[in-house]
Length: 320
Image 1 (cartoon, rainbow, N blue to C red):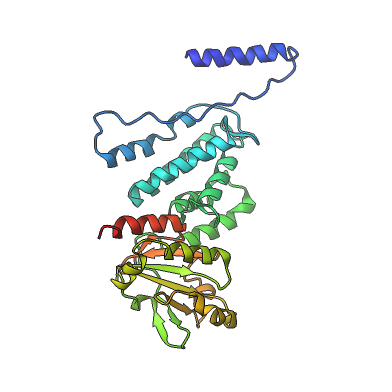
Image 2: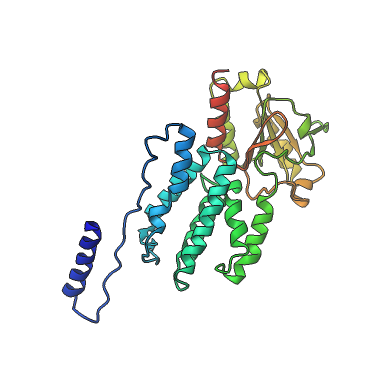
């Protein structure tokens, strides 16, 4: 209450000192209100994470505040984006079903907040942040599984611009491909000698499915990072890990020319049927694209940043 009175007094003072009645005062922005910590009686770590996720947005959404080019519901752009990234980091610590439920709940709250003031830019600005952070191929925290509850809502929401509905509907369809926990679509590929292999024929505890192109700087960076990992070659020789680098375009002369650059203990091949792109077996929106699969070829991480995959493998295999 004291803080609100101080803010109100400052707003009034600004209006008086900047020219008196008739001149609008500058918007008053606020800091993002972080959620309260879990109650002391919640001692289990998973329960504490769930509590933080479930209450992350409570204080932020509890007030009416300006949304303009500089701020979203009164919180400046840089700060609200950092807060959203923190929220996604918490979701990544939770079971996928809880994380997706939280994302769906947040979208419903976004709609409810917009319904309080139809003229507000809140829905537009917040969903722009969601799309950029969770679906942009260049985002370091992109996650199609977490984006799906949002984009399914955005595809049918009355607050979505009509011209954006077809795009969101398509994105929702693509995000439903090969979701977390599902067995990915199998496909056949040929190696440099023309021998035919299949994804499901790869035997390893974990498989990194690496859609890459020759002479792609980002692909080379990923290759170098993997090769620099301690015990990386041991994981491959022990059958704990397989790296399947698959080329899905048609310039095969370039791919053949580039073969000596791939590590000898990697599996390399090309989609000779061209079905990955043409039949959209996978939503390969940009190259490079990485999937982490378990021994049964179920999705652990989908189109994930390299750092997430390395962290997962290191945690699971480092002390094996």
